[in-house]
Length: 116
Image (cartoon, one colour):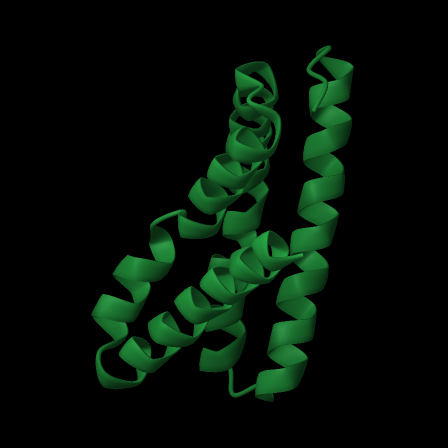
């Protein structure tokens, strides 16, 4: 139980620290956010839990393929906000577009025989 609480606490602390840094410097916040810290942590936790490098490799490959459609969010959100669309509506639309992009990516990858 202590191990899981440590994993949760460390991950949560990273998110809070990065959001606090972003308040002071959007560049530093963006830089830290763009580093795949959560993915790296997940790979560490997976390896520590399983000692299975094949699972870590599969996770890394899946993250690569799913990172591509996630970029839609970072294109849509600023465009919507620049159109003076309400923040929460902009976030909702951007997230919906991202979900659709994930779905399309999975369909395309399945079509070409890539299994995530």
